[in-house]
Image 1 (tube, rainbow over the protein chains, first blue to last red):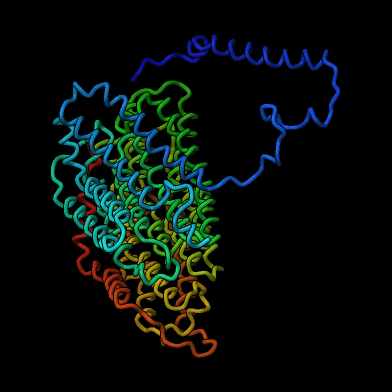
Image 2 (cartoon, each protein chain N blue to C red):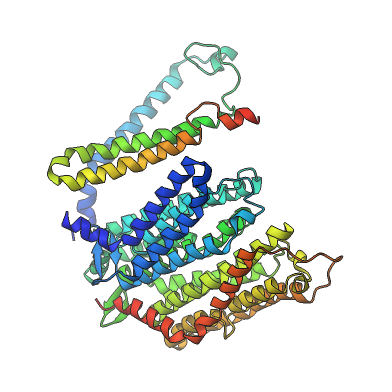
Length: 135
Length: 495
């Protein structure tokens, strides 16, 4: 059991967070209200268009994205997870010895099987082979 | 390092299923003739896991740094999960299925094994973090399995509903678990239990009530209990039939496993072999109302269904309500009731889904009206279906009877204030008999429209259904053994 604080102590110890929260909301809201009061408001059609780094926007933002993007996002996860887990593994590698090496090897092998699966199913190509044959 | 190897020795079945899963993915990637080995490899890995499980010895221990409980209770539940998965793979002729035509079966086996693996972990989870992790591991491949018919919009819709409900309820449960952690100061279930026995901080009562409610939302989603059941009929209807059958038994078993462990170990005090309530939270009360609502709504909604998959979905919701009776009983007998019910439920429900799949493979229909004259068109199927339905109804000498016997017995043993609850269960069983008999009437009495030809039934399906029908009767002859297994599994209570 960790030491338990009474609810009054608990609130006092977090009062700085509450103050920070109030200050943050006040800063943003104050700025918005202040400029809303003093600025002139002249709306034109051009001002209402989406800002795309200075380019003329083409079409709306509600378009269908190619489903391939999601597949690539999933494949990316394979490497992402690998990096996240191998970093702490590398840090304690020397202390744990052979068993850590085998475990890491198994982990990488599992991910490699995943990558091989994606590759064999043709999902690493932007246009899948079987999609080209039968549109 | 020794601790690691020791832990590994207690989870050999999990390791075997995991390796089988990897091998299936490799074989599927290799393509060509190697793909033909996928089915046998999956079955073999499950069989080997069962053998490894039966040879597991040693005192109850928490392995993997306390994450996994290796005890007789988890052993029996894991055996049920492996048995259920094995029966799904053996009794459905995937090659003959109309639904799965043209879809690769490699991913199907891999996902099925992935869910089974996660269910094994969930059944022996001994830590709130592990509970959550395993529950998510069960859910995610399940969503994909429901969406397996990727060109069928209904399958996609079902999977989306399942996903949305699953995400909402797992988030709800996580919040509940965080409250439990906040109150107990630890995530280990044994630690939570110890904290409950000690003095809790003032004002914990409300927090614990809220925690129990939120955590039950997660368990309720997995076992399809009212009001977390909405995904169930749609998911079963949209999913391929073998997947619906699998979801209705295996994750449900795991869900009850974790519910039982959480309720009996974390939320109860163990005093001399009996369970005592943690005074500040009366969870059996809460669970009892969920159970009453679940069995009543499931049975009443099933009355008007004409699609067999939906009918079985509502029937499976109702059965979850009965199983919960065993948990509410909060005793060793209640726990045994849950185990017996889950064991018999695997046999009878897989059988009923097996007949539905066989009829769909031949006729292409899930409609009850197309079952007319089944006793003439295929006497074997009609007889098998009648066996499964009578078992689901809970009539002796079929095994379904024992499930009801144990849970009702455990509830009645709690005392007169629980008699009305047993009464509600009994009325519900009578209501359920109505719609099970309706299916039988369709098969035997209802007039046929036109003269439909005899059904074509694959040899493997016929064999599997005969075996399942036999399994719905034979255990009755040697019930002493089954009784002994459940008794051995539930002795963990006095620790």
